[in-house]
Structure formats: C-alpha cells, structure tokens
Length: 572
Image (tube, rainbow, N blue to C red):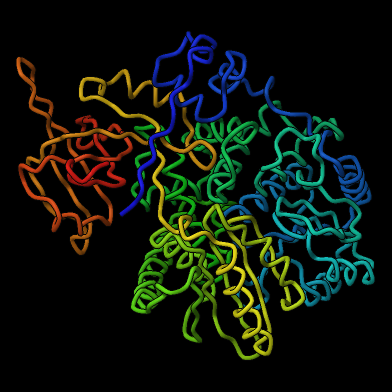
C-alpha cells in the first residue's frame, strides 16, 4: 500500500506574507518554498523581458558567440550536431532556424541511436571532415566527449559545445562550452538543451545586431523551447517556467506546419483550447521521441522544419504510426520484465538481445514508477551492453555510474535518469557492483512509494474558484507538479472499466449532506482497473487526485484524475 503524506500548512507568519492570496495558493506556494510576497509575485507573474536572464551570464557565451560570428562572417561550413530525443531535435531546429535567417544553410547531423549511440563519435568526425566542415556546434550533448572532441580538433574541426547534462570533472578542449551547471552565478541551473540553444540565439542576435531579425524572431522559437523543456523533464521554475509559459502560448499559434500536422494527427484540439504542459508531455513529446526510438530522429527534425502542408501531413502520419508501434513494443517488453521476481533486490536489472534500444528507457521508467525501485534495462549486443537507468529520488544513479566509471565504456545523464554502455566482459562485475551499492545504500523505507498530498479538500471547496487558483500555478511539470488533493468519505455511486483493454477505472462519487444539494463527480483512473475488484457501489472511499476541467462535446465538467484510493476505514 502506498504511503500517503499530507504536507504541512504554512504558519501564521508565512500566511501574513502571502495574505493577498487564497488559502489554497498560500499552501501551494509554501510547498514550493515560496514564503514572501516578492517571491510569490515573481512566481505567479510572467514578464518576458523583465524576468529572463542575460545570456552573457552563462560562462562560455562570449567565446561561443565570437567563434560562431567568425564562422558566419567568413562563410565557413557549419554543422549542428544534435541528439535524437525531443529536447535534442527541438534544440537542433532552434539553431537551424537561426542560421537560415542569416543566410547560412548548416549541415544537420543527428546520430543514429542504435548504430552510433549518444553524443559525438569519431566516425561522425571523419564524415564531417569529408564534408569540409569547419565548425561544429553541439546541442544537448558534448560536455562529456573528451576523446571525441580531441579527435575533431586533430581533424581541424572546431567544436562549440552547448549542453545541459552533468559535466565531468575534466572538460573537453572545445572552443567554447556553454552549460549552466558550469557557472553557479547563472540563476537557472536546470535549463534544457533547447533552453541552452535558445540562450545562445539570444546572445548571437545581440552580437550580430542584424536587420535580418525582427523583434519577435526569438519569441517565435519558444514553441520549440517549451517542447524540449517539458519533454526532457527539467524543473519548471525560474527561467524554465517563463520560457514554458510563453512557449505554450506560441505553440497554440505556431507557424510550423509540421507541429500543426502532428497535433492534428494526435487529435489534440489546440484550436479551441489552451495547450498545457500535459499535452506536450503526453502527446507531442512522445511522438517526436518516437522517431529516434523506432528509427532515426531525422524524420522528426524534417517534420519540424517542413514548409509544405501536404508533406507535413504525410510526415506527421508517419510519426503517428511510429508512436503506436512504440507503445505496443514498450508494453510487450514491460510485460516480459514484470513476469520475473525482483522482490529480493532493491534494484531491478534486466535485459535481452531481442529488445529495442530506443525503448529501454521508457520501460525502465515505467518499472521504476510502478515498483518504486531504481531500474536498469539494457540491450545485449555483440560485444557490449547498452542500457538506460531510471531511479527514485533517494538514489542518485549518475553518482553510482560515476563510481563505476572504470567499468564503463561511456555513460551520462542526471540524478534520476542516465544511459550507460559497458563491455560484455565487464558487465558481470558492473551488475554485481550496482546490486551491492543498492543493497548497502538504499533504505528499505525508500522503496515504499510515497504520495505527497498538497491539500485536504472539502466537498464544498471543489468549484470553479479552486480551478482558477490551480490555473494560476500553471505550467505544471517537474519542480512544479500538478496539485495533489485528498478528499475523504466519498460514496461510490457507480463503477466501470473503460478504454482499450478495459484498463482504466471510471467511477462516480458523491457525498450526502443534510439540507444540501448532492454534488456528483466523475473520476478517471488511468491503468487503475484493478481497483474495481477492491471497491463496490455504496462503499465509502478516500481519494488522492488531481482536479481538471474536462471538456467533452462542448460540455465542461470538473473531473478527478485518480492517483490512488482506498476504503475510508483503511486510511490512517
């Protein structure tokens, strides 16, 4: 059973600081460590020009801008070296749009996930040399490619690195490196790859001072920044929050025919409603990612840069098909791993020769979420093992890989998500070491899933005013999660399972009150159909949920998205 934790309420002093806001907003701000009226105003108001940071505060920016400007002025051959995920593809598109605007057609190089793997590689360097490339600009990659950049240098190819991944203690000898983690002075340490690329564009536009850019050029790039930021799961606070907020507005009005076609194929009704971070995270991002997971990310890049409506529609349909294939294949791998017993271990490690490399990260994420255990899923190749890791917040997976770097061929990532490659020879030692570290350092208590509850709500508080307060806190995502509510003693009026495979739970609830109108609420629990065996009509239940406004066939209704539930007498 999941552990429910009701977060504390703000004290009298903090409430006084936040007295201009509702009790609900006061509580949510307090949970985000926002305890003064000034910080609350900064968080809840969005002023693009005022609140974005000067790109020159990023160390390496001046060197990068000067080297790129020289390349433009001298008409050098320039390549953009991207990554195959949604963050990398959007970051690549951002730079590509800039260069096209100044009359430069860059060579686009996105590595093949299976054949080349993540980051720069020496084979790519030799290819770019044959293409007479003088300057390579990386996006969303490069900060850990010491040997590869050394090889590029020997080929007389200059490299400018823009990246946001955790840097190593020893940096590559590039012409410039822009990475927010390298400069503690920069206010937003957690920019996405697309965010870093955008800051570079801001720096370049200011340096070039060209009449080729109208005043809104950079703002029309924000749809791409928002997609990269949300899809890469970086925290949505500070500058990321501003970029995402404005980016979602631009996304609704995007000029990109490829994005319009993609949203049409996914049946995302962007013309009649606002686009949310959930729309990006669950609809747009996965479809862009599907290109690199199932085939090559070039398809996604071409879609984002397509200017022909007919071609864009065909490309979007192709990505839609790939995404469906991705969903089916991911489910099959997940079900294979689920059949095995990992109950005695504090970490899940599993792999196969038959699995698809582009899907192991998704499978690892789903297993980690379901069992609340760090998870490493890998593909066994001819001479090496390549995999992805996902972890709980109590276990820093990139630190673990750092400690075992002597066994690895390459690796990289973040605290809770990483990729790794290890030789077959060293894999048994690596697996044993990971199991030992997990066994020693993970507290058994950490393996019990904890659901943090923001607010215990009464039936009379669930109304449009509460929904407006929730809206004021958007956009939601990492670092600013959608508010989690608890409501108790609700009566179940109906139960049914719905959706493909009857996997989703749909229930109607109400609370009988004397001399009061009875309010009925619809609840949906995705992949929670098992609860239909545990509760029945007339049961009293407690529900942990998110609250949404559901618009169906022109009718708007408040809807509970169930996170967890239990019978009222089972709650402590």
